[in-house]
Amino acid sequence: MAGRFEGLSDLEWKLFEDIFPKEPEKRERGMPHAPFRHVLNTLLYILITGCRWCDVPKGEIWASKSAAHRWLQRWETDGTLESLQASTLGIAQEKGLINWNYGAVDGSFSPWKRWR
Image 1: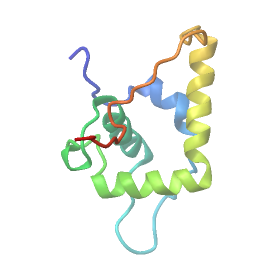
Image 2: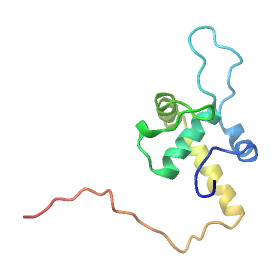
Image 3: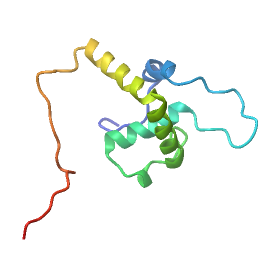
Image 4: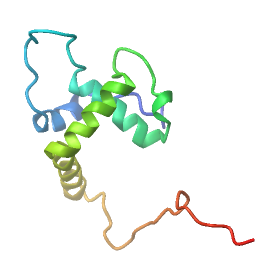
Protein backbone atom coordinates (compact mmCIF):
# COMPACT_ATOMS: atom_id res chain seq x y z
CA MET A 1 0.00 0.00 0.00
CA ALA A 2 1.50 3.36 -1.02
CA GLY A 3 2.14 5.96 1.66
CA ARG A 4 2.29 3.47 4.51
CA PHE A 5 5.42 2.00 6.05
CA GLU A 6 5.31 -1.78 5.83
CA GLY A 7 8.86 -2.64 6.83
CA LEU A 8 12.28 -2.49 5.21
CA SER A 9 12.78 -4.24 1.89
CA ASP A 10 15.74 -6.60 1.49
CA LEU A 11 17.65 -3.94 -0.45
CA GLU A 12 17.01 -1.28 2.21
CA TRP A 13 18.08 -3.65 4.98
CA LYS A 14 21.36 -4.41 3.13
CA LEU A 15 22.24 -0.70 3.38
CA PHE A 16 22.06 -0.74 7.18
CA GLU A 17 22.90 -4.33 8.09
CA ASP A 18 26.62 -3.68 8.67
CA ILE A 19 25.97 -0.86 11.16
CA PHE A 20 24.55 -3.20 13.77
CA PRO A 21 26.67 -5.58 15.85
CA LYS A 22 26.70 -9.18 14.68
CA GLU A 23 23.92 -11.20 16.23
CA PRO A 24 25.10 -14.27 18.15
CA GLU A 25 24.08 -17.61 16.68
CA LYS A 26 22.53 -18.86 19.91
CA ARG A 27 22.21 -17.48 23.42
CA GLU A 28 23.07 -19.65 26.37
CA ARG A 29 20.02 -18.77 28.44
CA GLY A 30 16.76 -16.91 28.18
CA MET A 31 14.70 -15.89 25.21
CA PRO A 32 16.51 -14.94 22.01
CA HIS A 33 16.43 -11.20 21.34
CA ALA A 34 14.42 -9.70 18.52
CA PRO A 35 16.28 -9.54 15.19
CA PHE A 36 17.73 -6.09 14.54
CA ARG A 37 15.78 -5.78 11.30
CA HIS A 38 12.51 -6.18 13.22
CA VAL A 39 13.64 -3.64 15.81
CA LEU A 40 14.56 -1.13 13.10
CA ASN A 41 11.22 -1.74 11.36
CA THR A 42 9.42 -0.94 14.62
CA LEU A 43 11.46 2.20 15.33
CA LEU A 44 11.01 3.49 11.78
CA TYR A 45 7.27 2.81 11.98
CA ILE A 46 7.06 4.95 15.12
CA LEU A 47 9.11 7.75 13.54
CA ILE A 48 7.26 7.73 10.21
CA THR A 49 3.69 7.38 11.49
CA GLY A 50 4.11 9.26 14.77
CA CYS A 51 2.20 6.57 16.63
CA ARG A 52 2.45 5.94 20.36
CA TRP A 53 4.56 3.07 21.68
CA CYS A 54 1.42 1.20 22.71
CA ASP A 55 0.13 1.33 19.10
CA VAL A 56 3.08 -0.51 17.55
CA PRO A 57 1.80 -3.20 15.15
CA LYS A 58 2.22 -6.85 16.01
CA GLY A 59 3.38 -9.40 13.48
CA GLU A 60 6.30 -11.33 12.13
CA ILE A 61 8.26 -8.29 10.85
CA TRP A 62 7.86 -6.18 14.00
CA ALA A 63 9.57 -6.28 17.38
CA SER A 64 7.61 -5.81 20.59
CA LYS A 65 7.42 -2.28 21.96
CA SER A 66 9.54 -3.21 24.99
CA ALA A 67 12.25 -4.84 22.85
CA ALA A 68 12.31 -1.89 20.44
CA HIS A 69 12.55 0.61 23.30
CA ARG A 70 15.29 -1.38 25.04
CA TRP A 71 17.38 -1.55 21.84
CA LEU A 72 16.75 2.15 21.14
CA GLN A 73 18.20 3.05 24.54
CA ARG A 74 21.18 0.74 24.03
CA TRP A 75 21.87 2.07 20.53
CA GLU A 76 21.70 5.65 21.81
CA THR A 77 24.41 4.98 24.39
CA ASP A 78 26.75 2.86 22.24
CA GLY A 79 26.68 5.14 19.17
CA THR A 80 24.82 2.77 16.83
CA LEU A 81 21.97 5.25 16.40
CA GLU A 82 24.40 8.02 15.47
CA SER A 83 26.05 5.74 12.88
CA LEU A 84 22.63 4.89 11.46
CA GLN A 85 21.75 8.58 11.15
CA ALA A 86 25.10 9.44 9.53
CA SER A 87 24.72 6.59 7.05
CA THR A 88 21.18 7.66 6.14
CA LEU A 89 22.24 11.29 5.66
CA GLY A 90 25.23 10.19 3.56
CA ILE A 91 23.06 8.11 1.24
CA ALA A 92 20.50 10.92 0.90
CA GLN A 93 23.27 13.45 0.21
CA GLU A 94 24.82 11.24 -2.50
CA LYS A 95 21.47 10.90 -4.25
CA GLY A 96 20.77 14.64 -4.04
CA LEU A 97 17.69 14.23 -1.85
CA ILE A 98 18.68 16.91 0.66
CA ASN A 99 18.40 20.62 -0.06
CA TRP A 100 20.53 22.30 2.62
CA ASN A 101 19.20 25.77 1.68
CA TYR A 102 15.86 25.18 3.38
CA GLY A 103 14.78 23.93 6.78
CA ALA A 104 11.59 23.44 8.70
CA VAL A 105 10.86 23.74 12.38
CA ASP A 106 7.80 22.20 13.97
CA GLY A 107 6.78 23.79 17.24
CA SER A 108 3.48 21.97 17.66
CA PHE A 109 4.79 20.02 20.64
CA SER A 110 6.45 22.97 22.38
CA PRO A 111 5.04 23.64 25.84
CA TRP A 112 3.75 27.12 26.59
CA LYS A 113 1.78 28.78 29.34
CA ARG A 114 -1.56 30.41 28.86
CA TRP A 115 -1.75 33.92 30.22
CA ARG A 116 -5.30 34.40 31.43
